[in-house]
Amino acid sequence: MTEEDIISLGDVVRFQAQEQPDNVVFTYEDDAMTYAQLDAGSNQAAQALASKGVSKGDRIAYMGKNSHRYFEVLVGAAKLGAVMTPVNWRLAPPEVAYILNDCQAKILFIGPGFDELVGKIKESLEHVELILGCEKAEGDFPSYPAWRDDFEAIDPMIPCAEDDDALQLYTSGTTGHPKGAVMTSGSIFSSRAAGVTEADLMDWQKPIPGEITLLAMPCFHISGTGTGLTVMYSGGSAIVLPEYDPTQALELIESYNISKIFMVPAAIQIMLNHPRASEVDFSQLKYITYGASPIPLELMKQAMDVLGCGFVQMYGMTETSGTITTLNPEDHDVNGNEKMRSVGTALPGVELKIIDPESGELLPPRTVGEIATRSAKNMKGYWNRPDATAETIDADGWLRTGDAGYLDEEGYLYIHDRLKDMIITGGENVYPAEVENAIYANPKVADVAVIGVPDEKWGEAVKACVVVKKDQQLTEAEIIAAARNLIAGYKCPKSVDFIEALPRNPSGKILRKDLRAPYWAGKDRAVN
Image 1 (tube, rainbow, N blue to C red):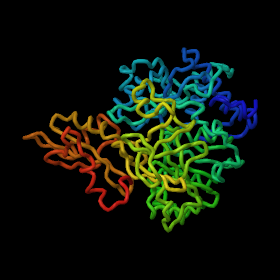
Image 2: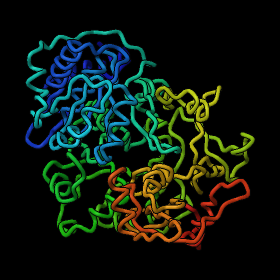
Image 3: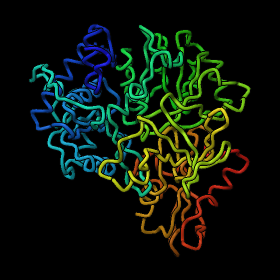
Image 4: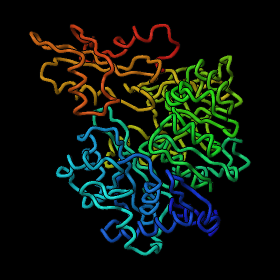
């Protein structure tokens, strides 16, 4: 097998196991997994999944923190042409049940400590036939490794194409329910489709023999799973953290000579505020890539001073299989040049344009409009949502991001605002509708609108503006506590304003910009 023969996620591991069988691909706690072990384990996983009727196009799901076993099962599914759906473990039980039912997962793998949550929703799962502890037995749920080891490591060799479904990640929904964005092997490894060669890559993109990546962001996001897949594709090695922990991250940077890390700005800030940050040797750290929200200039200055490495800002979304633009290290200026306000330029093979949100007409440079993109990176569509897919991707393949911004004459992209009512807090996307639905469940609430306001630590914070029914009383604490029973903690409002009435236009639509305006006054863009 040659590198040119790689078509699917399964092929990536087949190739690397052939070329470097004894090299370590993932280290999780004290367990080091080589490429040969990943290949063999994923073959066993494929055979085990097939024994339960999992076949091409079927969905399986993973509910747990980061683990090397997650990638083993993901690759095993890929070798059958089946699709992995990682579920956000921060979600409330009703949200988890919705996703598992929507994706129609046949088998659910859970990480340590999630047996209690899954036990609460087990009876409401419409398609799940088997639940397994991914690393060991969890409560009443048997062990995946023990189950896997009953099968031989025989590669099923199911033919797979680049446009076959490979990964399904759920994004927050404008109407209160998340949508499953379907990615293919072609969209995940789109650089091949774009004809990108090593000569086209920036220095920070090129694989370096022996380099080690720290995988610290959650695998239910494209940032976490994408990091692991990139490591496999490049033949590298990654240390897998179950979740981001600054103490562990600092220890691993030093003890493993970590070369690269992807973090959201809030995680960078938490690391820099750690007491050990001034003591750690960062000399082997080459690059930190970051995204999900802009980084404040003062934080960037501090990070450059303490960490002393190159920084790369990434802009993209789940629907684009991750990054579509990068602001490269040479454009990072601690004095805050104009380019530092941008999210960089398009990756090779990625097209960008700015359009009028209403007419769809192309707009000239430095004119704010909706950002649209076209490339092999674009998702296949939303799972079982042709209506939502058609609203997002047009007949010519242009994907409307829902972000407002402009391009300058050199092709640098600047984010100005969001056309969708989305809030990004600590790197997590939150749509007001899902929070409002949870707050409306309280019978004392007459009306509610949820907005994002600037927050020094998390970038943006969720604020609820609540109208209480006549002759009723509610406190901020009561509203937040009730919401926590229905939605994830990070989606719950951090603060509540009680108001007499919500501002609305003549057709009854809430004027969120009017509610947001006082909090964003004096800022040059309405995102943080």
